[in-house]
Length: 275
Image (tube, rainbow, N blue to C red; front, side, top):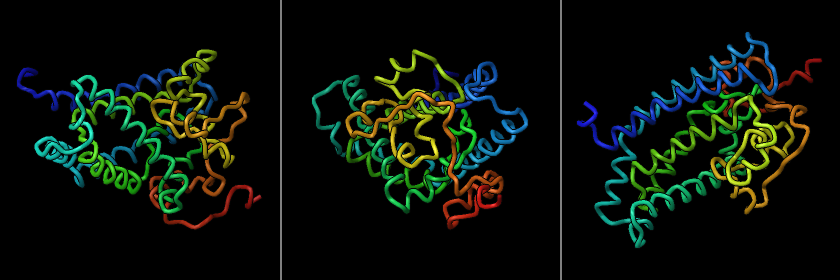
């Protein structure tokens, strides 16, 4: 049966299973050694809403875009379009370069989501999560994911990306985002790990309620982009960080409907306003 599958189909299957395996792994790690303890009832409710949102997003994007990435990549290959198709590199060299270019673009896209008000309206739903854990890595608005996919479809012919290269990068993103969103710590090893990759301690700062911390540490896989852009930031008292956004700290914004409505809402009443 496996011999009848193409390499792309096999990668797609692995790509579909990987998030589930990683979710189970990091959920177990959080259960065993949570960085910031959270009451089980709150934790389960929080994860349920985030994961339900992720499942609906996956179905929606699948219906909307389907095989668009594969079609676009095959077109660029057939017509010899894109930067990678012009370079005298072998498969390994092109793949490494593709992963670097994709991660550089992801940094730029993340920065745009914070700096351009229209995009921030969608991205702020991700940041409105008051309990950062592995399920937060799946918490994105369908609007943000739609714009992200459209930009990536434009990027494919420009760079000459192949569908399997995008899938491989997607696996790296799953591994990295679930790891650095998880409610865990790797202790002293974090300071060495974050020289090359985004670490849990590094990304916790990005989810702080303080604007100057929220607008830092945009990298997804490789941390070098923040060092180059001057947006790298660290602090020592990580357990004192308050996650989420003050404008969306009421329970109504943590439901599925509330998360969907977040981009279309004006500034709302907060817990502090109600005291």
